[in-house]
Image 1 (tube, rainbow, N blue to C red):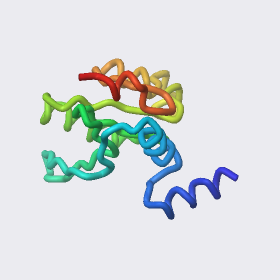
Image 2 (cartoon, helix red, strand yellow):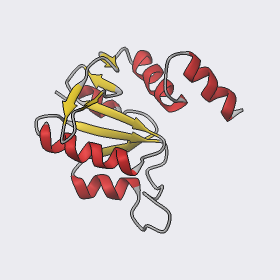
Image 3 (cartoon, helix red, strand yellow):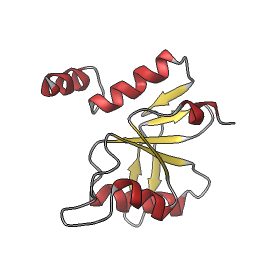
Length: 130
């Protein structure tokens, strides 16, 4: 069942079912947002970051099921190069460990590097922030 749900989400243009759930959540709340609408260049080797969601209030939300080493490195670079960006994460399971054998969870990593995070859906509080 989960595999079919993922296939349906991909067919609908989302990268995961979690992204689709969050966009549906925003639609149900009649929230203002954009989905994968802006790109931010970052270095040391020029690459581009496309946030999953930018809320109407400017909060950038990255929606993650799996949080790879590459993703973590990229987001530290983005935070350093765009200090004005309010970048936050929504995880399917923030209690997952960042790698096998580690005692650090996704949420621990966010806390360590100063990123706000939530589980499952973008919190209404984030949507309503000024």
